[in-house]
Structures are given as structure tokens and as C-alpha cells.
Length: 320
Image 1 (spheres, rainbow, N blue to C red):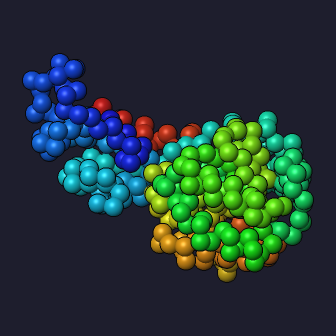
Image 2 (image 1 turned 180 degrees about the vertical axis):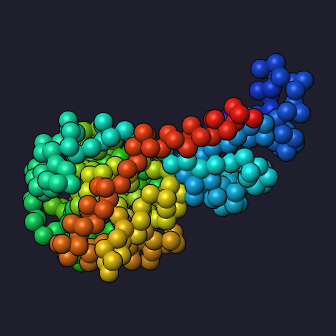
Image 3 (image 1 turned 180 degrees about the horizontal axis):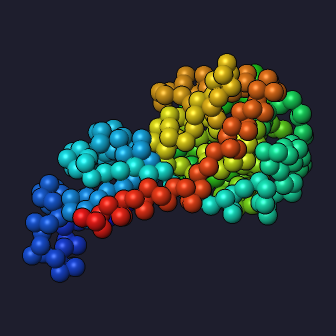
């Protein structure tokens, strides 16, 4: 069984590696298309010969069979589609759960939500930002890479920060252009934006618990974990409908009061702008927002549940 996590990171080598590994006589196993280009892909070899292929969400399993998301491997994945299955990752609720989180100052649950607002207040005090009772706090914890959809922030966040009573907290590091943009936001909107360059496990937990809305506008996302953490913490996420984000975040319907977050389809500033506006409007309806929080907190993405499809797959393979 070969599991694919992210086709954007494949590991492609010069064909010289075959000689170094003593595999020159087995070049035919390494897929001729790569050899003619002077490169070899052991991942492609695995895709060709594995008895079963899994990836980390149902939608991503479909997406990687397309040129847009297949990164050159989509023809092979289409040919082996009958052997490919998508299974959403699980979450360790022993580590990510507001009832027992060792990092946050106030524990809370779906039955006792008071601790969330107390944690929000404590978080803003911790970073030296005034506590605006009516203003929503938007959180982002991410690797700062193109995959995470951060280009969409350039044309949307300044506009919203200028015209709306909104706070934005960001944690992460990566490509210099994104780090510079977040640093610029912090300088341009003092008291409304806070950015920590790098990563802190403690701050990641604080933001998941203390933010009102979590932002994940990914260009593509094989599975994603933060959106599932956010649901558990009663922090409705804004996501692009791709990969595991599509499989784990149900769009909010204010009429039926069903759904767990906000999603948009097209990777455009207009798409993110629409989702942000929808979320900020929904936030003003306090009873409906509480229901949205509870909907997300009721979802179960624990490994105890997610492991069952793997067990079924392994049993089927062992049975021949």
C-alpha cells in the first residue's frame, strides 16, 4: 500500500542515481518517460507497482487525476484509478481539544462555551492588542507558501482591515514575499494586525482557541489539519473548496442553520472576498453563530473513526 500525501513534493532525481544505487540494470522498472528526460521518480515506480494507492481525502483522490493537480503523474493515476482510494486524515483529540488543552488558559466545551471568549480576551492581552468585544478575530496558522493560497490575501485583507472592525492574527514562516506582506500589514494597521514570524506550538493552540474565524484559502490542500482543529475549537473556518477542505468543512446555510464553515470555489480574490463578507455578516447574528460553532464542535474526525477505512482496505488486500 502506497500513501500519497502531497504530489507537489515528489522527489525526482537524476538518472545517475540508478548507478549509485546499483540499479542500472533495472532501469526499465523506473518508468521510461522519466529516463528519456534524464530523470527518475521512485514515487512513480511505486504508483505503478503498488497493490493499492491511498491518499488523504476523497476529493484529493479525484483532483490528482487531473492535469491541474497531478503534477505530471495524472495519466498514471487515471490508469490506476480502480486501485486509488481517498481517506481523510484523523486528528489526535488528546492534543487538540479545548476541554483539556494544556496551552490555553481557559478550558471550554460545547456545553460550556464561556471559556472561549475568556481565551480570546487573554490572547489579545498576551499580544498587547485591545479587546474589542464586537470585533471578530480572524486567525491564520500556516506555512507561508504559494500552496496555502496566500496570494489571495494581497488584494483582500487590506481592504477588509481598512473598512471593517476586524482583527487579524497570523503565525507562520516561509517565502519572503508573504512574510514581508504580513509584516507590512502589522505596521500599516497597528492594533488590528499581529504577526509572529516562525512557529510556536503554544501560540498555534492559543490562536485556534482564541480566534473567532480561521482562514485557510488554499490553492490546493490534500487534507489539511487546521480546519479540523478549528471545528473542534468552535472556530468556524473560511476555506477554499479543494481537497480535504471540501471533505471536512460543510458550507454554512443561515436558513437551515446547518453547516460548519464558509467555503468558496474559485481561486480568486473575489471568491475569498465573498467568503469573508459572508462570514463577517454571519458573525453579527449571535444565536446563529453559536449554532454554527456547535455544529463544528460536534464533528468527529478522531483517528478512532478515520482508521476504519484503512482496516477495511488492509483486510480486503489480505483476503486477495
